[in-house]
Image (cartoon, rainbow, N blue to C red):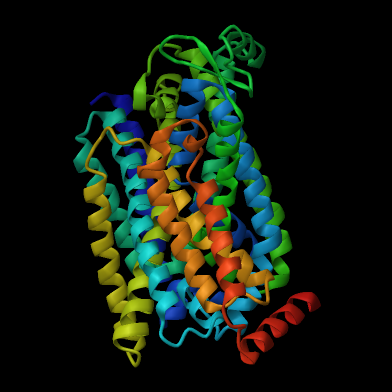
Length: 509
């Protein structure tokens, strides 16, 4: 290992030690399951905003999106970024404060399955357990994508064994999440969101300077057929362009719909100490998101100018890593490179910790306490949660064993799963008084099943059927909710009263 690699490794190890230390420090605050899962509803606006965005983006922001821009140009990555930016803003506007208030009215719900169960007075816990099952399914996949990102990082940087690197990274995430819980995770995510923001801007500036300035980057990109167009994409291997048609544009924009169903983002809305502070959080979070997405796309574009033929296939997702290694390789700069590469660790950890905590809560809070042992003590629930968290991490690590896995593809499936399973139901539950339990169950099952069927079978037909599975599944879920709710009995007077109380509470803020 060279001196430069040693310096990078030292910087990254120091960062990981800091993360674990934060977990141990804040773990002392976890006396109840409410504190462990939702921080006692005590988050401030800055932590709420930054942790919501950091937990959302994952290693995909620094690997998947830049790799997509590097390989195909502005169209695919650009429309995806636009969809995500719009989705972020609309989610803050239409979901954040209403969900914060309704979860408080609905028996102080501390998880998304809890909220669904309490919102619809589901005494048999059918909806809660279906929601918990989907959370387990899609979060195992989502968490695996983060582990893949870390494994690729250390394998690419230092030539370490991919599987060993992935497993060590997973262990570190598990340790601080098990000890620290939601509060530690949120504070860490605030730190990591700040780091990711600085790293994204810095590497774009350094890369553009090395390429001869932004004018040269634009000239180089313009010389490639369709590379800088939003209506064409460029083939990395052949150099030829192809039309980016309406189906592809809708597929990319549909990513924004996913935000309405992301449990780890929605949980931040529920955890803020005062719903009136969410307006400030919205401004912070949306600004962070727009700038970060733009910088991630630019990393791919600048990287293509600097190293036009160096990466192919799934290796394009390593363009950010390669830029850090090659542009910061003299003097003490490798330490800076190590800090910047911690951005990938930050992105991966900030998502994986949230996903593991939520998946474990689905088992401990919803299956164990909600179904098997309703009178379980707080200590028993937290112990089950921690054991489950470890087991879920093990399963996710098994999914991540293949070093050729695409971070972008793994995330896209899990994102669609959550967006279609929970997104329409969240929106209808907050804005439609007439929605009932059968409609909620139909919408959740219809959305989740459609994602899987569309991805595995229907998309293979090509043409219009190749649209991103989130879009048709979201539509199917909405139709199921409306049709079944209208065809079955109205909600009870008690549910109507709670809905009216929540609307009044929101209006008064």
